[in-house]
Length: 337
Image (cartoon, rainbow, N blue to C red):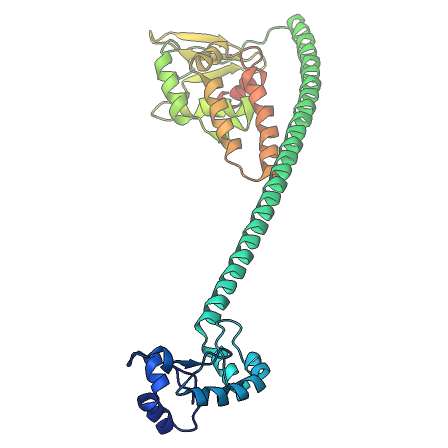
């Protein structure tokens, strides 16, 4: 056992305690007595204080012979000198300065690792963002390319269809000319037997705007002019008793009849009045809004493009209603004959 004041070694605790209360040089170190210059006998090799000059001389002989050994058992952290290797090892386990150094080194190492990890994360995050931006740009370019290709394809198809329609119109015109040369067949349908009870007012624009705003839906629009004919028949041309108030009397020439607000039977050739009425009610604008919402609600890219292609075709058909209502009046004739 070592004395914590003078570092003297003892074999038993009782010997150590006896030393602490009796050894003068130790009492001096403890500060319990004031030494005189003559009473201080300190070893200049190990700083040990002896009780007399004689003991100091004897100690130096031993101390000089064990100088190397003392140096070997010196704590490299706090410079404390231990008597044996085992005591040095035991001291190393409890040395406060060593613990403080170890903690500081561990903290510095941990901070360095955290910093390196953060830098690595920032680098990976930057690379990932760059990759996402690149993919997004490529996807947008691809989508734009597909849209342009579809528009070009649609334009070509539309031109082809216009040519076909023109050919059909020419054929119909020729047939109409031939029909003029034939004997006129008088229709058995007269104003007296039309049996129209309710009237129609093509001047009430606010009414048709309200009807279109509240009743037109995507099911009508995706069928183009035919869909509009079905919409008009279902919503406008049937009275409260379920009877038609707008009747086709001559399907071959697209002649329709209706009762005006004065109760007179009027003729609507090629359904021009009815067509103009729904156009004034905003049928084109409302169909465009509904169609756009139907396309934009699709998140799947392929379905979005499919819907866009479908809608572009039928919207084009609807937007040409003022110039060419062929499909509208034919479907209307079939529904009201």
